[in-house]
Each structure stands twice: as C-alpha cells, then as structure tokens.
Length: 93
Image (tube, rainbow, N blue to C red):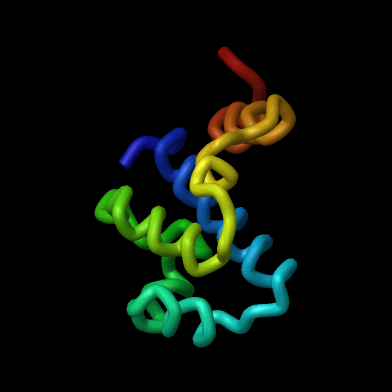
C-alpha cells in the first residue's frame, strides 16, 4: 500500500476515534452498534485495517456515531499538509 494511502486510512481512523471519544463512547460500545468486533474497530482507528475497509462499513460507523459520513473523509488543508509531511519528512525532492 502506498504511503499516501496509508496516511489516508490513518487519518480516517483518527477521525473515527475522535468522534467516538467526543461523544463519550468506548470502543466496545461503538463496535457493538456497528456489529463488528472491538479488535476490528481498534485496527480501523489505528489505520491498520488495510485496504479492505468498505464504504458500507464506513457508513455503518458514521451511523453508529450519528455523524454525517463526509466528516470521516473530508480533510482540512492542514490535514492534507500533514500527508505531505508524513510522506516526505525531509521535504519534497
């Protein structure tokens, strides 16, 4: 998997964790609402679920969090700059 794709999945996972914590939910509570295991949710939140995460699962997670799905896949310009920094910590060559 390319580094940019890896960073994208990590940022989606971080957003899931952010909203889950913001709404006072434990991992096991959200996992139960979404009908997945806690270990699966943990891997998703860490960006370690690989490239197998489906759109349907992202929609289920957004529904479980009671948020608009676009919040999980829309990134600010600062977040996008982080992609470049993480991909090229020594600067663009």
